[in-house]
Length: 177
Image (cartoon, rainbow, N blue to C red):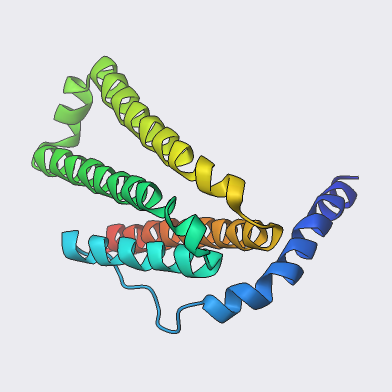
């Protein structure tokens, strides 16, 4: 039953990929995405992502006027993400010198929940700004452009998931040493 349900749900997705793949592949970058190791690399990666989305959509001149707020929202969201990562790295570096016993003894779950809530609130606000920026342009997109946008979205989500999985594997390998 579960397999039948999954197969039934997969058919529309497969149909979307079959119809969206040729235009999307025509716009796919020929070089691999750069690895993010610093602020400049993160900015370069953001530039690549913006260019991929914009190229895939093939905006008309009338639609181009809606693009600047979207690009600003994407860049702001990426900047805030980098700041959250830097804050987390700084926190890890602060705690690195402490023993596990000290960490367990001095942990503050309320402070942790507040930090987590603040991070989630910022992510929520950034995502809402991005959605609000996209809304006027999305209303003008043709069905073909919407299919390409859906494909790029799924592709980006898959790449993000793959990146997270790869980082987890690398951190596990590093912990084994």
